[in-house]
Length: 248
Image (cartoon, rainbow, N blue to C red; front, side, top):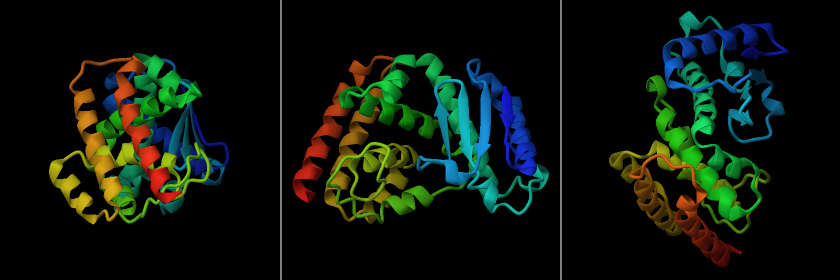
């Protein structure tokens, strides 16, 4: 596997050391036989809203956003640094996507390549949710920013734009963040705390209905059939129509 940063030697050494650490400790849990490259790129080259993404099953791209915040790249002095922990978790998160692509190839194919919303939207939501739930507390990282930001947004969604125009009015953006929000607030106590801070009652209803469906899906054995996610799509579609009707 090639791990590299083409434009910064310090970043190149830094990400190589972190990847080596992750593989040493967690490699036996991961299925990375298809992974050929991990590249750290300038944050301005990232077109997505996240700090990492997968390009098929063979490449992971990691943003420089967090390394840009650090004052040192000596890993031995960063173990208690929360930004460092978030960066390390980001890499681990994307490795988990590569792993899940091995065991759920049909769902990932639908999530990334199927243009039919009934297939790609629930597949994307589910695959993001289960990986985020598995990795969000990786090595005791403290990262509440997404949830803190989520509850402050009004979410008056009146449009649907996939992979563009990420804003508080885009229903796709709401769905994308909800997959992370629901995973990070899986604890009833944490969920209750954040639900209290949400003013939009429609968003609260949406969360509660999704929560019931996710619990049902999690009770099932491992599956790789998008038909199993059609009930999830029905909820997503129902609330899309409600948001558009109310806020258009």
